Length: 335
Ligand SMILES: [Zn+2]
Ligand SMILES: [Zn+2]
Ligand SMILES: [Zn+2]
Image (cartoon, rainbow, N blue to C red; front, top):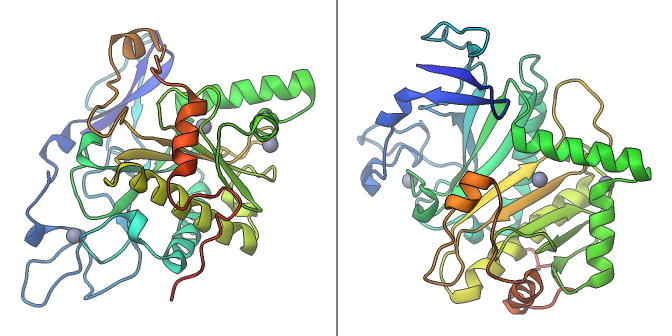
């Protein structure tokens, strides 16, 4: 059972996915569905003894294709439509333990290629208007499997947060003739206090407007709408800055920092979104090593975030965490 229900007040789709209640929740290590199938053991999602990166359909998808007919009839006010989309799982490695941070640079570079391929393939489908690549990491974010993995949701509609970003960038372009994100990058670089890491192709910053204490945005320096236009050097540079940001996160307090990692790219609805700009957002829930920021009444009820910290101070902490210099964010290729 899965359908889209229209929220007439917020004017956005809500996905109902009741079958997901039964999904695998933190299984014992012997029964991890993302581990390779071992001889004589129970079959996992991966019928191979070993693998680098593997992508497969989510067994408990919020959306699928072809979608089942909605279980309820809509009205004029309460519109209903099939949840016609695709949900995939990207298992980063055959190794059960560890996190994306542990992946070596060639592996990270490989992952950038996998993301690019999946974005191209899913975005090329006529019923897919938006492809969201993301990762929920850590039990504080509510992951149901510890095995290092990310997800891809291919939506039949443009999700509301992305639509809001599209609207603001289109407006900014109309008013100034410039890209909103290019202007943000320039402002961050001029000020400098909120920059966390930088290389030839990307810049990472706790932006001026951060809603979470350790929120980091990675922007492409060139005005790209999606990963599809990255050249080889940019793909390698993305792998590099991702590794640097992930290491900084874990070295901050010597714990594996939980986060939501979200990749924002232009929609794949066949329209031109040349005013939009590729970026990755990290939203870690931690305020301190032990304390979490809760999305509470003011955030949920009013949509207004309260950040108890200053972006300038949090960026300085991340900048100081190893690998420590902004200028030398190029890690030496391992192996
Ligand atoms: Zn596993
Ligand atoms: Zn731009
Ligand atoms: Zn964004």
